Amino acid sequence: MMKFEDIEIEDVDFGAMLEESFKKADTKSDLVDGVIVKIVEEDNQAIIDVGRKNEAFMSLDQIRDEDGELFFKEGETIPVVITGQRGERPIVSHELAEKRVALAEFIEEYDDEQEYVIEGTITKKNKGGFVVDVSGLEFFMPRTLSYISYKVDPIGKNVKALIVKVDKEKGSVIVSRKELIEREKAETQEIVDKLLENKAVVVGVVKKITSYGMFVDVGGMDGLVHYSQISHKGPVNPSKYYKEGDEVNVIAIDYDKKKRHLSLSIKEANLDPWKDIDNTLRAGDTVSVTVSNIEPYGAFVDLGEDLEAFLHVSELSWEKNVKHPKDYIEIGQVIDVEIIEIDKQQRRLRVSRKTLLPKPIDQFASANRVGDVITGTVSSITDFGAFLKIGAVEGLLHNQEISWDKGQSAKDICKAGDELEVKIIKIDRDQGKVSLSIKAMQESPVSAFAKKHKNGDIVEGTVKDKKDFGIFVSIEPGVDALLRLDDLAPLKEEEVEKGQTIRAVISFIDAKNDRIRISVRRLERQEEREALDKLNAEQDDSMTLGDAFGDFKRK
Image (cartoon, rainbow, N blue to C red; front, side):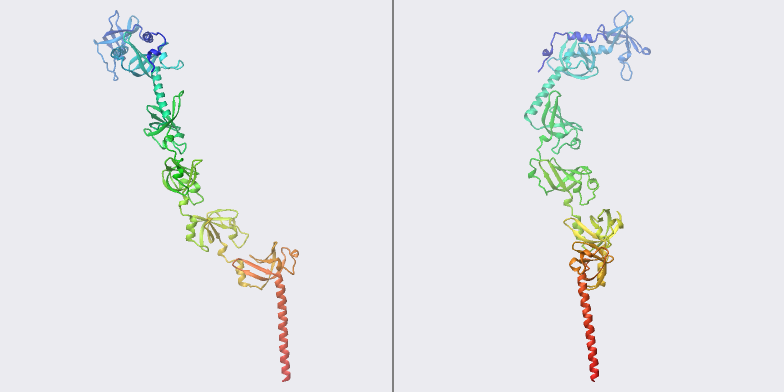
């Protein structure tokens, strides 16, 4: 430990330095007893007999209390120090005298077997050092023992220092800030060495919380726990987890000697939950969590044991149009979730809430059947159709299911917010899809056609389209029939053009699936058979008449 003898580099009369610091304020440094001869309130001064040729002046402010009342009366004796002259009259100070008396008493009672650490304010300076005021006592701090830069103005600075020398003969007290700082450095280094060497977990007390971390007192010195060293979850806001005065377990991780900066860690003092996570959690597990933070894209949830998971907005609900998670959950709320991903390498957990909720498509399928007619609200319109909101599910009304008139689309019949009556034509639980139809509630043109026609009826239509496998012929509005190429003869494919009128016979009608086929080849055969049948009928009629006539003649 550094001692005063080690610090004293040259033979310096510190008592003389102290006297030099008082030279301007106390020219003669005479401490005498003075008698108050007269108090002159209007001049705010007292006339003091100090045993000299002329009486002295003294400001009354030096002997007033806080209420303005005087401590002494005329005729009383008080200690004073002669500080200067005003003309022929001396100027005296009772305050300075009190300080001298108090300092003398302190020096007289000083025990050099004890150690004194003082706290005071630097009030004066000279080339040799500084005067430190400690509750009215003025001690001297040589510049070489001050640890104060020449570039810094120390007046008014509060300092702690150690009394290193008391000269009772000269009435001086010498203090050293350097001695105290060097001692604290040594003590600090000893504490730091132990903390870093042992890497032991120690208990600290939170002293101050900031946005970048918190200061923790460990064994009388402060260390910083950076916000990245608080939790295994990653960087966190310390004010959400701790408050001033809390006790925390910490480990020392670094010390910057130049900056005297001790770095501590809370997370290193606690087990890393990710090291043993394979034995504690698995994908598919259901756990209770606390919502710790909510963002537009999802929420962070606390699993306890220093684990945090992410709940994406898409995993909150089966509803597709979730605007903001706060519409479904709130900070501090305890909810059940399912673990859906554990990425040990990236230290990332993902959870889902909706997987624990009933699927809307299952609820819908339990309450509705294909063929049911229901009412839905148009939620959006696309180029291929419209989506209708039906309870918790959305169904698609495809353009093809709008009308039997194939030219119509959803944009032609509705807008967002409209209510439509539709028929359920398909429920796909696996895909979570519902298909809807308006035209399924109406009789198809083919069904109406089938009520008036049958196979073998001769029809006439216009060529609408040509394909590799056949020709589509429009028989009536909304009723198209397929004329396959092998049923085209005696017509030739290359001779058939769009808009051409074709006469054929119905060969197949499937009203349920809206299919009709016609045949020119069958028409030709049918017409031949009908002609032959007619001829045979005519011949039969003729023979019967002749026979009848012959019989008549024979009679």
